Length: 196
Ligand SMILES: [Zn+2]
Image (cartoon, rainbow, N blue to C red; front, side, top):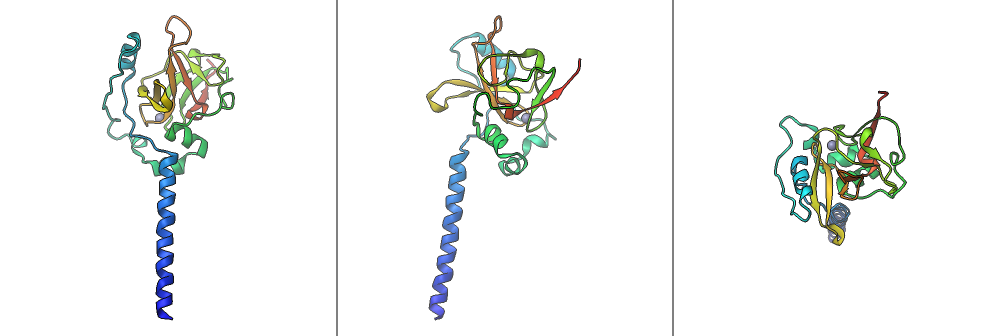
């Protein structure tokens, strides 16, 4: 009888471990992402001018005392709603024409949905026809770029330099003369309306 009880305990323990292992593996697969390496906007501008030039990585870290940027994945998972988490922390892309800002024409500032840093200004927003908020320029110094080779494509990912949130991608088919098109997920942004 006692032997039977021991076996049951053992089975329960092994099953619990198996469930934990599967759960953690699933999470890793759902959000497999290398640590974000950031290059500055200035370096990006330089590399943009030379087409085909390899993007240089910069290992600069957030400022000391920057509490928001140092939060771990568990923190973000608890703080953010699932869609915002998937887009900003797992580099997912929201469906075109689905976000809250692609058709927003109000004047104001677009800030990071994770840490509230200023990222874009409405004066630089344009109708790209893509279904995602599109900007020709960044505002402030908080948008950084990095090379993205996922899905067999060579693209330039843009992230919030302050907290590392994935924002979207930068393309070179935007309006002239600059030609930049920052294609950004609405889920990565929060809009602050300004009446000026
Ligand atoms: Zn941020």
